Length: 211
Image 1 (cartoon, rainbow, N blue to C red):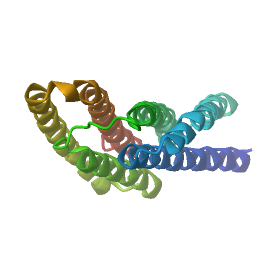
Image 2 (cartoon, helix red, strand yellow):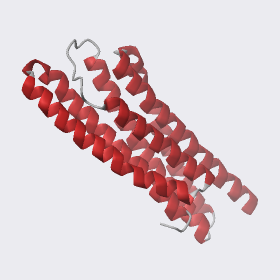
Image 3 (cartoon, rainbow, N blue to C red):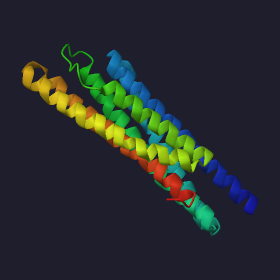
Image 4 (cartoon, rainbow, N blue to C red):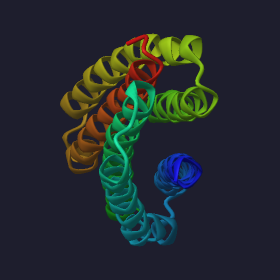
């Protein structure tokens, strides 16, 4: 019975890793859709959100069953709690990727766009944080998790700077306001995705008993 329990625990852990990979790819493709004015790529991200939602629900159901089937010891319980929390944060990052993709679709045929906003840098940093947070989880790496948490300050700095740059551009050229408004939503989604990536790192530290 214990062998089957640990097999189920490992299977759920692998589902969490798979969910992280799906969400990271969605974020990457959504950003490329925005940058390349590729509405079709944005639509693929939106359509793929059901897969993310279904996998999160599967992880949640499996975690509940793991607790019900056999009372976990302290370390196992921390791991199950981490999987539940990480799956929730990953699903939310997937939602932010969808918001980015929807705005990419709406901006695909917009001739005027803000030029100074640092979307590429924020996307790059947020995506890297997510990948490292998932690697810290997979490898049970406390130091890497701590490094991810520290890097969230850079995402916040870039977010605040880009908001200021957007405001300057809108004041200088009112014609850019429609597209710039969408960029405000995009920046907010990316900043929140960075927060969620930091949460994944925090949950990893809690799992390791070092939170």
